[in-house]
Structures are given as structure tokens and as C-alpha cells.
Image (tube, rainbow, N blue to C red; front, side):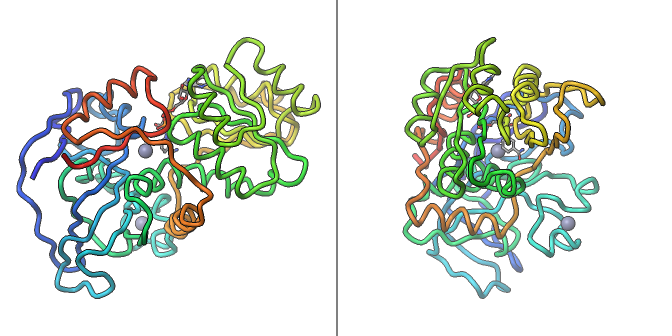
Length: 346
Ligand code: NAD
Ligand code: ZN
Ligand code: ZN
């Protein structure tokens, strides 16, 4: 079967032929129908030896939907032909966090040689992917796999981030979404579906602001020296209750600190490597809180899929065949994509 492999750190990914795995025990083999391309994949490709907490080589792809092709002899809950999406942040599977479905915060993460599927373990930018357990599979029913795949990260990650600060997103609240790419455009839709908050979108790209408008943002504005003032004015002069930063660069963190309301929540999701000083007194407002959420929980993935099946979420997708993965990556890097790039079998 074909698989897009990272051969070693610092080398470009290669589409190569490898043996198709056979499921044993509780394992499940999926025929991949869609694999989303995340900006984190570019961070992985740009990493040098030792930068990531897991070794190469492995097959890329951590947003995956497909059809069950074969199951190990111990599997009873699922059968060949079922359509599923994969929960990607595989943990140890045994600690208290993992047992509670919070594998994204596995207590033994530091001991593991992977951060999830496609991140140290073979992922779904391939014809088939081997999933270690049925607990990582969420049925998608009639949902299009091309829609479902991005929901497992580009949907789940903002959903989790938003759930963590739901108390600040009540009546009369305001929220800024910085970065309207794969994750950000779904963040806006989730906020509109679940909260009464007024949603302000910020991006450096006009096309991304057009996506924000389609997703239901109340205001969208191009990042400039004036953005902090614009967001403050739009929130009645107080500052926004929540900032969801999907870029995480020094300039977006600085903007976030400047436009945050007293007692506001700064949620840093983007892995842009930026820095912000935490000091009292300092750039953050009084009572300010910062969090660094990672991916989401298994129950939350079920909730995201059910929200999408109810019609509340629509992923903006640009499709590429698996053989054109390099082109998709080049377009993502150039900021030349709307929403999410999804690889499909060719
Ligand atoms: P993306 O490239 O699709 O979207 C990023 C968006 O941010 C783009 O629209 C871009 O134009 C915009 N942007 C960049 N610089 C900006 C700036 N200075 N001001 C305003 N907007 C700016 O990327 P994505 O796949 O949505 O991922 C976003 C980030 O989140 C990446 O860093 C990724 O690694 C990270 N990520 C984190 C988690 C997590 O669990 N915390 C999960 C997935 C992705
Ligand atoms: Zn990702
Ligand atoms: Zn664990």
C-alpha cells in the first residue's frame, strides 16, 4: 500500500510502498477515505532531530476517516464496512486520564514515543491505517468522510478549547478568533452554534476573512497595528472576554494581551512558537487567565460529530489526491488555502 512517510527529521516526506498491516487482537484496519492536512504537519516537517517528543520514521496524517476493512480476532463492537473517524491523540490507554477518555492529557505522555496517530505512530496519509483499539473509532453514519476527517482535529481542538472557557462565553460576551484557517473557521462555527457570544475574527489574509464571514463572524478584520483598538471598540471599550489564538506568534500573543478584558481568558492553540511575558504587573490584564489546550477528549469527539450531523458545522474543504500531498503542503505553507486541505485516495 502507499503511505506518505517522514523518513527522518529534516527530510521531505516520501510517498512510498509499504506492507499493508494485518490487525491483531483489538486492532482495526481502516481503508482511508480522507486525511486532513494540519498546520501541525508542517511544524513536524520543519522540525529537526530532538525538536519533537517522538522519533521518525512514521506515516503522516492525524485527521482520518475511513471504512473498516478488517478487524482483529478480539474485536466485537465494529464490523467490516462501518464508516468511522479516528480519535487521534492516542495515549497509554491505561492511566486515569486515558481511562476517562482524556487521552490528550495522558499522564504517561512523557514515557510514550508518540503524541498520537501520525505523530510518532503511523497515520492516515496512506491507503490503510492500523488503529490499536475500537475505543479510538467514532461512527460517522452518513456524514461525508471528507467532512468527518477534519472534524477529528480542526473541529475537536477548538471545540475542546471552547468547552474549557464556556463560563466566559455567556450572554453579552465577546470573543476574538485570531487565525481563520483549518481550526479557526470551525471555531467560529462552534462558537455560533453553542454560545450567544459576539465573534470577532482576525487574519492577515483577505480570503480567510471572507471564510470568517461565511462561518458567521459578527466582525472580521485584517490584522494591523490598529486591530487591538478595533477589537476594544467592538467590545464596548472593555476588551474581549476570550481570545482564541490559532497562530500563537509573538505578534498575535501581544495583540491578545492588548485586547483582553480584565478577568478574560487567553487560549493559546497555535504552535507558532511566540512568547508572551507573564509578570505582575505586566502585559496581561488583572484577573487574566492563560491556557494551552491540546487536541480534545474522546467524549468531545462524539459531540463534535453529532453537532456536524445535526447540520451545524460545515468544513470548507479543498481536496487533493494523496499523490498530490506535496502540492497541498506547498499551498498550506504559502497561505493559499481556504479552510482545510483533505487528501483522498487516487
Ligand atoms: P492554518 O494554516 O490552516 O491556519 C492558520 C491561520 O492563521 C491562517 O489563516 C493564517 O493566515 C492565520 N495567521 C497567521 N499569522 C497570523 C497573524 N499574525 N494574525 C492573524 N492571523 C494569522 O493552520 P491550522 O491547521 O488551523 O493550525 C493553526 C495552529 O494550531 C498551528 O500552529 C497548528 O500547529 C496548531 N494546532 C494546535 C493544536 C492543539 O492541540 N493545540 C491542534 C491542531 C493544530
Ligand atoms: Zn493537527
Ligand atoms: Zn495514559
